[in-house]
Length: 485
Ligand code: NDP
Image 1 (cartoon, rainbow, N blue to C red):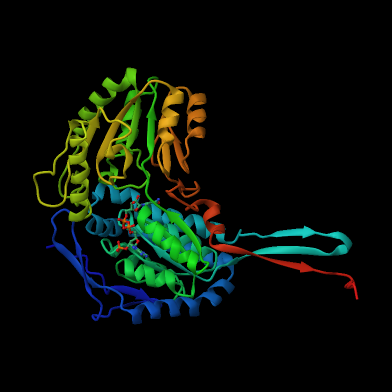
Image 2: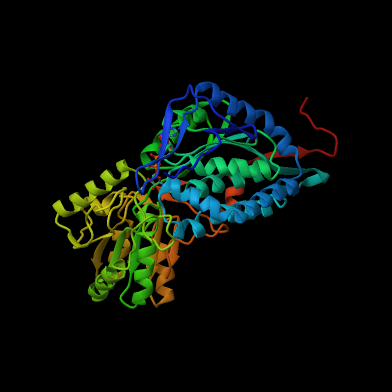
């Protein structure tokens, strides 16, 4: 049996630590259901230890030269790249995503973020304003203090890196809680950061379910929380942050539109829709799950999509030939199957898939629905699985209105040969992140995040670094002080 064997459940103050008093947490391999690791939830004593370690370490870290902070992050990025294969195997055991994917998408993207924010650390600047009579004021960007990161289960290593890198680059300390479903990736990040020279306490990982996350957010020492999760959790975490007047970044769910005009390159449009619906077996927040296809292209689009999906290789995710893995958990499988049954019951037509695969593990066949209308549940609610809905449209105005008729606003895509139209349409869709003639590419320098119920704040790019700072202004007088009496 495969085992991932983390040294211990938590990583606090630069060292692995366990506490068997915490409730047991089994980490199951989604391709077989086998237990690959057993960890323990953090007890209140361990949560306290992690927050205290972060609080103790943060001032000295903030006082460390920004260039040195950056060098440590860059060293961690290099270690991640050297160990990419092992980290990818671990990510596959944690999530069930095919090794073919994790080898290029997870630790690699995490390393990109560490390197990118490591490079930005020394360039973090404030403002200076000259005033009358030789007076002036300056505003520095100072760290927030102790920040909390809470992750979802779809990209455990990437999410931990996307949050830790800007947080640490700006001189903060972090306590990170991974999803209880995928606890392993963040632990190896903590180990690597320590090896790269990060002082003990600057980055800590504690395990547990929602209650552990809530305890971290509610603690008076926490200055900011960055959550990646569902809208329902976002409501709770944002409310808790507001109660303590804490800063927040909310990376939440979506039901994003992908618009394919009739002049689009068919092969590219199908490839884009595959990336935006079936990569990671559809468990990606920004997926373009409402695929609006202009009516003249619709028949060819669906036919080619079904043909291409016949090339899916479902199998052991550790086999590099496998390009389609299971869902992360049995619970997620049941939820996705529930949406598929609803799609059928509400009158959508199955063009392919629609079943649990006949093999061990939590595999669902790649599924395409046609004849989907805007009112159907599968067109309104986030499924977070390999389910693509094709919706027909006839005009640009119509598709923009329909694309925007959702409470979500995370992402959007447009495929067209007419670039002017591409810019025009993406410009009018209410989404924080858009793509023209591709889908789901998220380089470290591109701000990523949502509008409307999909959240606020951005990951990646300089704006993420700034979001882990606050402005501190100082007025400097150079002359006598005038007072009325
Ligand atoms: P959840 O919202 O269920 O959980 C997210 C994290 O929050 C988990 O670590 C969870 O702990 C924790 N949590 C739950 N309740 C609380 C609470 N009251 N206080 C503090 N923390 C809490 O999301 P999933 O893990 O199921 O992930 C899927 C969702 O994440 C989808 O909606 C997806 O769209 C979204 N997502 C958004 C992304 C973005 O960047 N916009 C990227 C990736 C995913 P636990 O689960 O361990 O109980």
